[in-house]
Image 1 (cartoon, protein in one colour):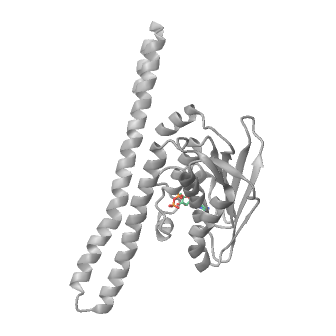
Image 2 (image 1 turned 90 degrees about the vertical axis):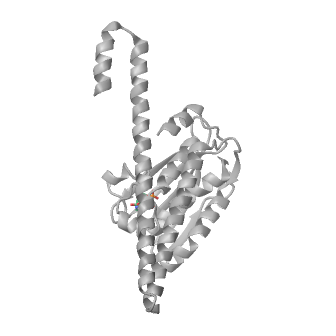
Image 3 (image 1 turned 30 degrees about the vertical axis):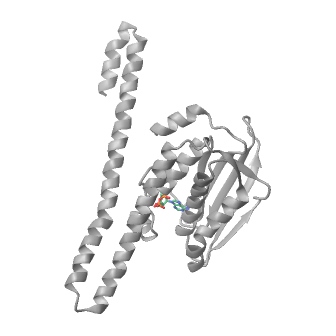
Length: 274
Ligand code: ADP
């Protein structure tokens, strides 16, 4: 509002430069607000498990003559500690993908290896829910970029597919090459038969810490950072991520990555401020 008023006043002066400066200031203020929100969110997310740990350790001390209670509290402490570890790890991952230029050590990465790694990462969780995982079309395909970042991105999508699906369903991963003006792209689609996502939530799930159902997400060890990491990785590789979903039926998340690509510098600059 304030910036608009200023630009209205300077416009008659015909000074393009001043207008640009005002727009820059507005953008700088927006970035600053996003940063402040992020710090507030991180603090809140850290406080929850730390607070629980502190209460639980008091409970353990009070219950020292009741071994069963001690064991119960210790078990819950372990869960909170795991949550804290996940959160710190994902914060480190997010900061890495936001700051490292993936194209500095870009290399051809085999899609079948990325897929096998992602499936491996979820094998345990999928096994306990009797979820079948199947992959197809990955042979002979590769994408170009930072191996670790690409593995993290696909791993997060497969992990979500398993986490947000009921027992005895199927998670499919399908890859294919599609032609594009700037060079061929590789599409990797992760499809689940899970709870799905409403149109309203679809717009927000890629934001840091956004969760449709915080309790459900926490129960599965979710931090709300996974899709933000995915979005950053694909954007800095010159790709994109899209989602199709129907509530109660399932979702498909599709990564589209350059086969031999060079992300355009403009995309990366834009990415850092997002
Ligand atoms: P989380 O750590 O909570 O999984 P993400 O950033 O990975 O965080 O995802 C954000 C939110 O998007 C999740 O909390 C969940 O509500 C929703 N979501 C992500 N993937 C799926 C999926 N495959 N099916 C249904 N909902 C999903």
